Length: 227
Image 1 (cartoon, rainbow, N blue to C red):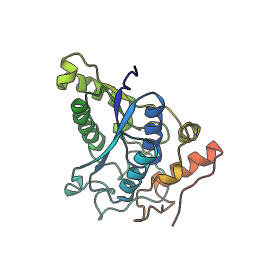
Image 2 (image 1 turned 90 degrees about the vertical axis):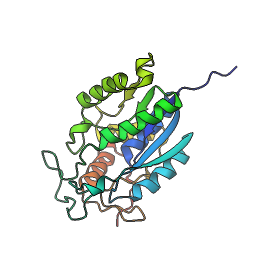
Image 3 (image 1 turned 180 degrees about the vertical axis):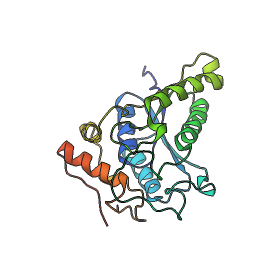
Image 4 (image 1 turned 120 degrees about the horizontal axis):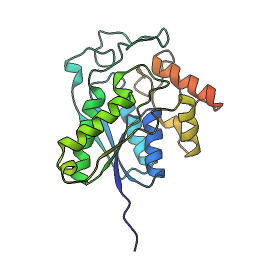
């Protein structure tokens, strides 16, 4: 008799990191349920990429949740009046930080996990080669996991909920190597903060620069389509 595989929710943006995370969840023996969030981001091409990736990597289901963070603005990713920086990765928290984005996404993932009876959530946050976002740090992931176990019926009834962040301590090059070893086709992914409707990347924003440097450091060809 076959033992059912455990279920995990995987937050899937359609970018390099979250795609690698989905591949890792599958490799670690989980039936993956992919969750994307349409939050008013200007780079909506990533959602089309997420649909392709979920199918290619064998997600059991793929849902797209809708939250309009654009109504608040405050980020170059949701407010068209704010320009996406293209002068290189700088110190500090950049204007591309979306207030509370990861908290909102993880909360939605937590809700779906409870409905599915899943005790595991995967998120592709990274605290090494990243743009300095405060909700990508290990302390934040630890705090959210503690909250999740306090605030849910599943947690109170003894089903320990785990937030997996397998990329958090890896360089971008290490992430690329890990995904390549798992057979990830990075040509399916879109990372650019201002990608064209067809997914073509600008090559200048922080996300593009970090991605390009990662492939170069990994010694692997970059399949990104640039406009």
